Length: 254
Length: 254
Image (cartoon, rainbow over all chains, first blue to last red; front, side, top):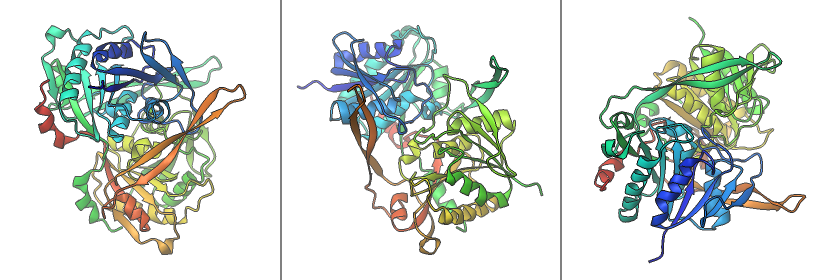
């Protein structure tokens, strides 16, 4: 049987420890190719590069694995891989492992998850993986364990096309992991704050900062599952219609 | 009665004709303030700026209206407006008028719509407006007519918090507009292509291009309504969970 073509991307850039860990975890399952940003693209959401051209460079960073870097966003990487490099769709797309939490509404800001959503839009079975540790030297042992469990299912189960999976992994040892749980996107929000500083000319500049508030106490929320040391799996769709509101809005006098 | 505070933003940048048209259309409804990108931010999706600081500059571009430009994305503009400039939430957020179609799955790529989604996440009644004409000198007469109709309803109806509206306007005269229709996000996709060129050193670079394929023939699809000269209104939520797939995924051996 022909090995599946597995496209690996991320948003932390090709040199991140997370993508190296993801390549190591998935390479037993198929032919791995990497197309990843050449620089950190965290928080890029579903951005695409339309106002400037993209550059694509072959990379030898992963021994024995075909790899490319691109100057654009994670979604650009997916589009370049499909339409320029391979001229075909990969059988599986995996993104990450992100250095940091992409649970709850973070899915909207996350470049890692947007690459997976782009895969879903292309009808490719796609999964984004994220570890709840921002550290550049984070320990991905538990994450790799979870990646392999999910990959085994991806290759044996019927994948619901047009969707992707948002997998988050708690920052704990494998033996402390309760398991892997199917969840919904938990309700949480950022309480933003800007750190205002003055540059060398006395002119202000701002750093976005803030606190992530996990308000959802529902047992099916990914945020709560993660708090209890479960890895969370949320199926994500790109139909953003609030269907339940259509009858109410139809009453408006437009 | 106190006038509502109306925050105006966009993704084409503060000098675009679209945002000027939006300011003109909404100023009769409240106190208008503008916080918009200082350069085009099309296709930025829900990107936020986390790896570099932001700059904020007061602008006198709109006579008699408080306005600021920011070096970041549309979502950055919303966050700066709420957490740094006003230290409070506006009563209404409007974004656009975008130069170009944001119907269907374009909602994911659109900076204009992501600003509105960010407003929804902040529980602000938020609407993104887009005209199906990319031209920098597009005619926004019909769009302004639609903006006013929607604003009248926003101020008299109970707005479903946690959602925003994606309003697209066909490129036709007011007398040819069939009306304003509540829709769902139509099924459509981009058939991408990269235009490969060589620079002055003979090295390749790529421009993202492609064709938008409106495949949905359902009468409730925004894409079809627009084809028939209706302005489309789609309620958008930021819970991206594919709830219907949770039972199926729970059967996986994870």
